[in-house]
Length: 424
Image (cartoon, rainbow, N blue to C red; front, side):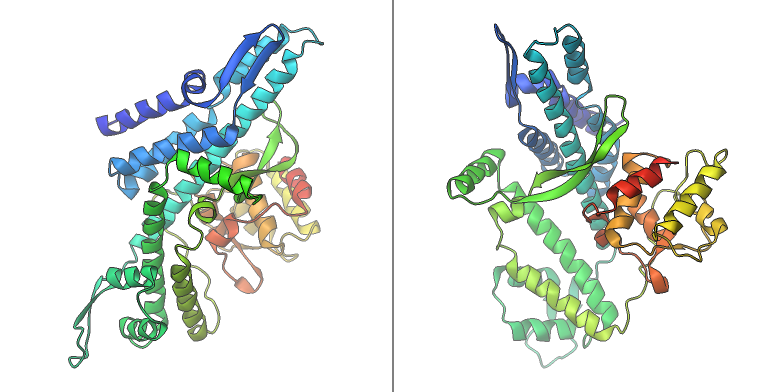
């Protein structure tokens, strides 16, 4: 490991040594005559740690590729965020009498640390996904200098970033936007509109990153207090996590976990004109494309072509049971061939994707159960969404959009899917 990465890992280790971090930054713990007490806020903890690590990477000018590599190696540390202190609390509980009020405090603390770990995982997973998307979009960038072929026009070259900045600042009219896009895309050619859209999403992502950096943790907390005093509901994005026991076994259906929506809290309308322009481009693309093409299979740096069931070589009967259950519940097409179904769990390149007849949220939940919550397949290094788009299609061979898939809420059939996957 280079000194550049070692320095950052040292910072991380300091951040996630739980006891030291609590004492200095997060909460207070005391051992009074009436037992053990702790004040600990899972949301504050996870946000502070994530923000400090992200700021360090940004301040030290890590490239997108370096950030991806770092976050990929960071997750194992995050998964053990709560281990040391919760293990100590479990041991202390064993020494308590049944009527000891400290037991309740220990339980509350263990629950808070577990939640902080889950929030941290969600923060870094979401950040990792955004970095992957950013890397993919950056490869599609067109030349930012576009020559104006009309020699009679006053503008002979157009800097696309300047054009984007004018849109963000609201310094350009709708007719000027229309005419400029018309020139850039050679009279609204769909393929060029798509490239322009990818470029603008790249620009918008960077602008929002810069905007986030303007706010400290204190700024965020002050704004939250302001909203509370005004009687406004604090905006959160919703995630779902399974509830597991100390042995790591699923004990009940996923619970909703909230992560602060900083854009809505701090600068909800700052990028309004950007979203208008993005919608304009999407509308123009849809006008000119008769039917959506299945998304191209994403080439990844890893060697993943399909899911690899951990017991693939010696539990074919369990795969057959999974196949039958998904069919009977209407999640996959009735005419699905068992051979094709088994192939998507072989880890090898597939010949024919499986048609998913359930809805998007059900497919999303099925993939989460397989890859991250019940861990029935081998580690895909955060590529499970890309692999899902390779292994499954919707009816009529309609391709699956990775970004739309991964943001779905838990479906009404969540418990059924958990049971089906749990049978593997």
